[in-house]
Image (cartoon, rainbow, N blue to C red; front, side, top):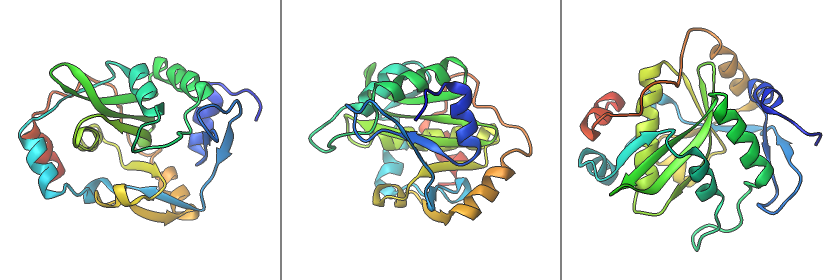
Length: 214
C-alpha cells in the first residue's frame, strides 16, 4: 500500500474501507472492505444485567480524549487473553494524526485515577467507526462502550460501525449487515449534523442508562 495520510484515511472510511496490519510487527498495511459488516444499532443497544449494575454504581470514572495515545498503545498490547494484535506502528502514527485533527477519539475508564479500560475509533459526519478496545479490570471496556453509545446518541450520530461481528459484541446488540446495506447506511450519515467534540463525558451511570433506555 502506498503511504497514506489523514486525508486518504478519512476518504477510505467514507467509502466503507479501513486499514489493518497482519501483526503489530508488520511494516505494511492493507485495505479491508468486508462483505459483511458488523454494526451496533444505537437504538437497540443492550446492556446485560450485571453490567447495568456496574454502570449504575459508577465503579469506573469515564472520560473522553484525555489519553488517546496511551489507549492506542494498550489496545496494541499482547496479553494472556489476547494474542497478536493488528495495530502496528504505522496504524498508531496515522490515528494519532487523526486524533490531532479531531477525527479520532478515545473513551477511557479509570479506577482511582488509573486507566484500566477503554476504546478508540474514528468519527466522520454522523458515523463512528470503532477500532479497538482494551480492559485491565473487570468490565472496564464494557463500561466505556456504554458511555460511548450514550455520547453518540446525545451528539446526533446514527451509525456505530464495529467492522466485524463477534460474540463479544453480539451481547450488546451488534448485528451483521451486507456490504450494499452498509454503504446505504453510510450515505445516510451525510444527512443532518453531528459532532463528537464537546466536554469530557460527565454523565453519571444512572444518566447513561437513561440515555440508553436500559
